[in-house]
Image (cartoon, rainbow, N blue to C red; front, side, top):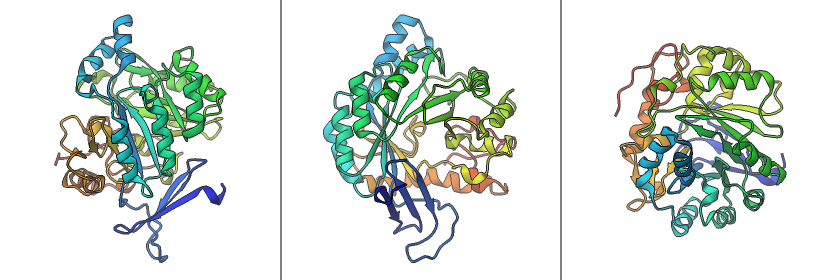
Length: 376
């Protein structure tokens, strides 16, 4: 890694040092202070969100179209629920946010209710982020990706992540799908391309098969596994993985292998499962929930949340129409969210590595000693 592309932050309010390499996307942090004191333990909290997930799209065009053409109840229910976010984030609001993040936030992830590349100001937003020294990434279904949009991603984005297409209530990866076409277009444009794969009771078998046969698309950088999460508009409890789900141990055993032509990563919500179900992954390679500690999510209507899935009842939300981003980060709702992580599983020897798992959806915590947790 070239030193010219390395940026770093020393915490002023909280002791830490973080480093980010713009070209490779490598991001590391330590509890060391600027004067050399401190520890090498993973620090708990940043002074300001170093990664900001921004929901810029206000409606899901593709899901509405799919619900009409495929008869998918999952898509239709999602489309009906999304009325709250009819208006996409304005470019003016986006500019205000980026200026507030200058010099403090390393990267943003453009997302939303669906594809950020379909936002009318997508190219301008990506360019504006770079202008202020912030690397934009995107998460997309790829259904609307064109060669022109792929070229925009190549010019401005660090990574483009493609998630699977929707079938009913489960997001799955289809080898011969629009998702594969998007991967091809992005790779042809030279974009570092990841694949987001949602694990559920319906998809874990396919995930095991793809890992066994190396069936993921050639050329991708990372397969990023995520857990299916029940939401207020899509709550199929049969899809939720549990600690005793068949194939779970086999999945973690396969995913821990070093022999793939791509990286394998887990979202923080999966850390309890990795700790409990395999001994082949070093705990230091796993990152506990970063929500409200190192990252945050911003909705199209300017509510800042510790996590995208923490917004169902706005319990932890702070409006940026009334507060600055710094004020929201230091607010009581965010502190309440952090306290859930700080106080989870006090007697568990593994708590420093997982902090009790997801504080928003306790039913997805893949721990064989499920924590009891009070909502605050």
